[in-house]
Image (cartoon, rainbow, N blue to C red):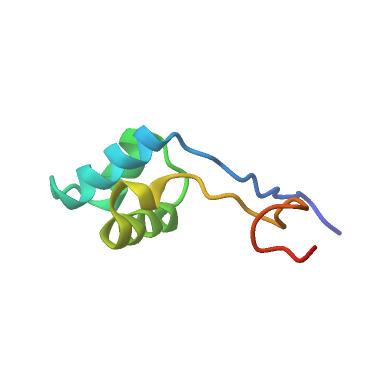
Length: 79
């Protein structure tokens, strides 16, 4: 019997929050845990992914990406 259910909720964070969190960790030497608590971030992996993206692409790497299938007529689709 199932006694409880755990639902995964996808969180989205503002670009400024991501930037501040990444800079606190990389530039100011705060631990991932400290950053999680300060910015109310639910997952260590989110911070680690943001840091990786920031190192690779700078602030642009933290901007939201469009996901899914591109709309018809957009560049890269066949007519």
